[in-house]
Amino acid sequence: MRREIFSDEHDLFRAQFRRFVTTEIEPHIAEWNAAGITPRAIWKRMGEEGYLGANQPAEYGGAGADFLYDAIVMEELAYHRAHAVQASLHTDICLPYLTSYGTEEQKRRWLVPGIAGECLVAIGMTEPGTGSDLAAVTTRAIRQGDHYVVTGAKTFISNGQNCDLVIVVAKTDPAAEPPHRGISLLLVEAGTPGFVRGRRLAKLGLPGQDTSELFFEGCRVPTENLLGGEGQGFRMLMSQLQQERLCIAVASIASCRRALADTLDYVKQRKAFGKRLAAFQNTQFKLVELATEVEIGQAFVDKLLAAHVRGDDIVSEVSMAKFWTTDLQKRLTSECLQLHGGYGFMNEYPIAGDYADAAVQSIYAGSNEIMKVIVARRLGLD
Ligand SMILES: Cc1cc2nc3c(=O)[nH]c(=O)nc-3n(C[C@H](O)[C@H](O)[C@H](O)COP(=O)(O)OP(=O)(O)OC[C@H]3O[C@@H](n4cnc5c(N)ncnc54)[C@H](O)[C@@H]3O)c2cc1C
Image (cartoon, rainbow, N blue to C red; front, side):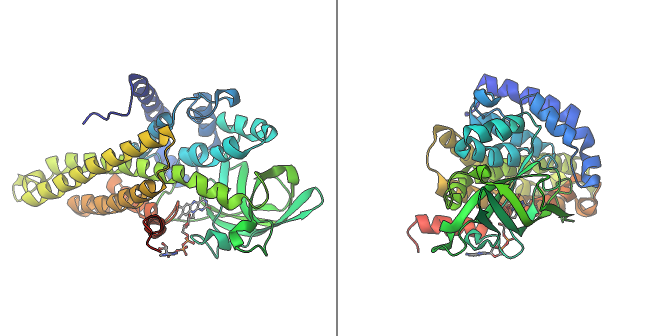
């Protein structure tokens, strides 16, 4: 079905980016997955071609275009299983903090090279002791003269090894009541004494992503690296999460489409009991049901994309989409794996990776349970 949110210019951009993915990314995915990390050069190439800043202001090197261009980048990367390149984390989750809250100096220093692919940005919220309950972070940033002294540990940080800059969620007022009022965001550069990268963590899926531990051991960060005001961190985080969760839903539906397309191909050629798997009613019903859900999900995501571009408050609906699409992705990849039989369990068949990669979608960017907590609150259920 033709999607109504995209113009001819969007379609042209998609064709151009798809060519880039098939020539410069897809041939290397297996190698990057095996290495557990993407080479920095690919970020530079993405930046050179303008794929990291479509939705960023032109005065800082972006294209000043609408968010749909970024959505196209997410969709194509997800469809081509290029999960190793966490472009949306950098462009749509991290850079907007600088665009929205950075001072002019901070923008020149990090946003401009960020859009160019020369400064890769990560965000450090999660800690070994807390993830969903963000207000309970224990990393501290205590002011001493013209510096903050940052002490604490972060874990599961995407782009953790590759990043040049981390937006660190820390308490500048650990005694604040309620606790979230003590949270601030600090921009910590790689190479700052006391900022130490820990292990690149072995994972069930997303093997090409350098999900890592980060440590801050009396790390002295200049006060000019404070983003927004002291105590404003939680508010800034909450206002950026709508876009983060929409990104997950966008990529999730694109991943569903790919797993479904490959499974349709597979069942049309594989035979059992003298006929193609596609001829069994069970296969047909399963795939028809999944294809229907993907269309429903796509229609919802497209409606949200259009609303997000308009600037509507769609926190509830995006939270619904995040849990619904990622639950669908987990179920769909499981059903598609089953239709591949034993081959579905073999790593040489991409559906095996799809199944493993899907598992985290309901956990990060706010777990699906937290999405339901948000919607419940907005429905007046607390
Ligand atoms: C591959 C990967 C990449 C990641 N990248 C980043 C990153 O770049 N930056 C970053 O900061 N973090 C990142 N994370 C961390 C991620 O955001 C957290 O794992 C997530 O927020 C959940 O936190 P937790 O793991 O501490 O689980 P917990 O908060 O301990 O939750 C455990 C379970 O309890 C449930 N639960 C918790 N609270 C409630 C509640 N109130 N009601 C009902 N159920 C509840 C959860 O839904 C979950 O099922 C990443 C994680 C992974 C796996």
